[in-house]
Length: 448
Ligand SMILES: Nc1ncnc2c1ncn2[C@@H]1O[C@H](COP(=O)(O)OP(=O)(O)OP(=O)(O)O)[C@@H](O)[C@H]1O
Ligand SMILES: [Zn+2]
Image 1 (cartoon, rainbow, N blue to C red):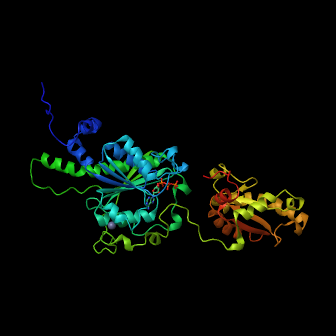
Image 2: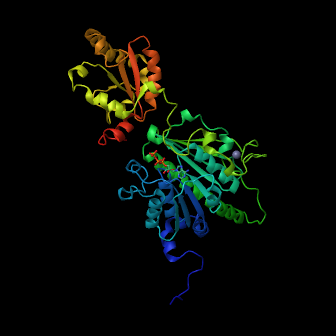
Image 3: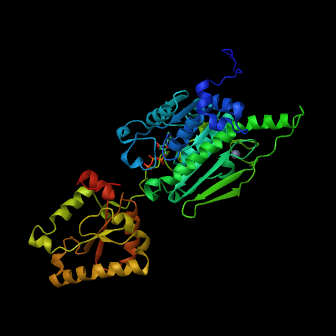
């Protein structure tokens, strides 16, 4: 009869051996690799489209301690891609919701939800408690902050991003490689930054990139184990110089199902945070939002507003809109309501009687002729009825311009002011767009 303690001792429990058996039997992982995963502490910043798949795979793989930072609450529009959050979690903190789901999958690991915003005040305290960081956030200011905190704390960073049908990932500050700042010393111009809320994203894309971030994280954790194994395989105690890892940026295209690997530059000696003479030695002294010209969130920032006389609030516009047709005089008051959103958004919802000329087409012949076709009968009917029929006190045909949130409509008004300079029109932007309409006028109006 076998003795009770016939098994060779190591720190994996029987349930762990069973749970991880399929990866445990791989020579690249083995007991040493599984132990490395078990004793590792990984920080995931952002529990959204990237953070959810990353967290669940790391939990499944047996990473012993996972911290999940997110200050936001779950919304209905998150569920198509932020797959750890369920309908019943709507309104609750994402960090808690994600941690709970990971705990449901693997109760033998420690999950640490952190529901505060990752700012330069708390960054070092949080990052220093972990071995490795995954950037799963969605804004440039936070991206620079995470990078700098990782450099200053000496932690590798697995960074991911996804938008539309495209995604990318890269490992920074690892084994002598560059940091995010080495490659991007200056932030992109604020007006070129597009968020998922503006540009859209297919849920599967962050699903794939987030999973790949988890994969890179596991490889970073296993790397010392493998290096040690390679060393003993050579049969010599002599320390070999570490092989320089391939530094690559991976670009994923979901439409082509392609993954392109691009070699990235080496660490930059002039880098402001990891270079020879770093200027940034304390993240608390950097204003990341000012540096990027954008807030540390993906909310659409209002552009420089048009002057007051060219704008109208949603509530004020509702008076004009609802009055149309209600009295004979107002019926004779022509006006044009122009919706400048892309066609696919116009198909989701629209105000009755609006004409769709997407902003991108306004300056094109097709947009110009659509507009001219709509304008001419209105101008003709106004002229036929005499100037008095114009509801505008300046005797100009009001052309109201609306979009989703009130930014594109302002750009459109500026374009149209030039384009229609010789027509008797007055361009009026509807402040806050359909979002304001839904909030202030019609709560039943669908928002997306
Ligand atoms: N500074 C930060 N501190 C903590 N969490 C952050 C920070 N910046 C971004 N995040 C989080 O990163 C996550 C990014 O995920 P994602 O872009 O999929 O979600 P989202 O912002 O909810 O999306 P949507 O744009 O559709 O509203 C969000 O949950 C966001 O709250
Ligand atoms: Zn650098």
